[in-house]
Image 1 (tube, helix red, strand yellow):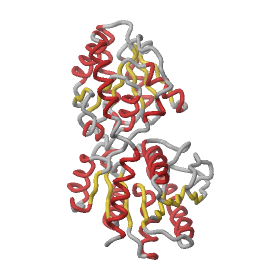
Image 2 (tube, rainbow, N blue to C red):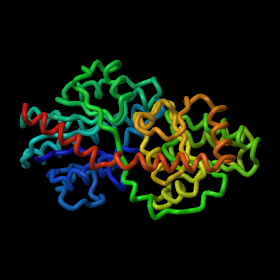
Image 3 (tube, rainbow, N blue to C red):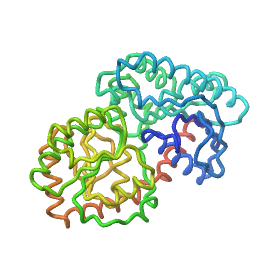
Image 4 (cartoon, rainbow, N blue to C red):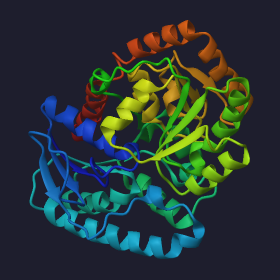
Length: 378
């Protein structure tokens, strides 16, 4: 089986979970004997033995995940489209020279290239949707991108969604037939976190991810205000960057938490793994989260984990605490309880860690292979 895969993000050029998903999936597919041709828009990438890399080199890589403010939208959108047009043209030229059985695109950014190759070669197209414009803008989408996403899912032979909640969204908001969508959850390579063992005696609450409205970090800071009033030794570490940083810093100051809430910005992968290991509690308070790989990373670090019920990760993790994103009081109560009853957190985190035995990229890759075989046999 030969797969021609189209990727936009890939380590070290990763903004969200898209890059990690592509890297881990391609690595697992290669181990299982699938030949992958992978097209990337940059020439520096983490090499995977057995994978044939193609470079559709662009002058500057732009991520849709960095487009948030409507006032900035026109220029960014125009520049992004130029990037996509260039990527599409180069990918099609490369695809014409290769032999493959299936085309696989990731999100709408690469779907145009996949659709063009499908038209030229007649090969089936899978489009994996990692998030939608409705998620990224919390229900206030830019119609231009909604149209692109609709075009992508309508022209795919199979749509893969990374969670059931994302599948429901595609059915309700994009009109995709339910039987056209296959849910394949993200996974984790827990061995990445095995060597990071730091004492969790401190009272550190951790958030890792983009600093955007979608992530609900303001609710976490309000929850931490309650925690701080109960426990003066508590600290909140916020790791990541994004357009909401200025607002979140100002919120922390307004709540009198300037010495309690610490913003670290973007950190290296190794440092991020150390943060997970150091933390006493990890919180993913997302307002709308198609999946949330950071929750799996926290569990792999045996860190007691709180996730919003509005996340895809909550579908597959049983031994984590689940709350509505807006319920700052409950988030605070859980954090305070985990500080006080550390044995409860240890039991929960050990049980959650055991769940990861089945949440592997190899198992996810096998589900993708089932989809490939289903399309090729048609």
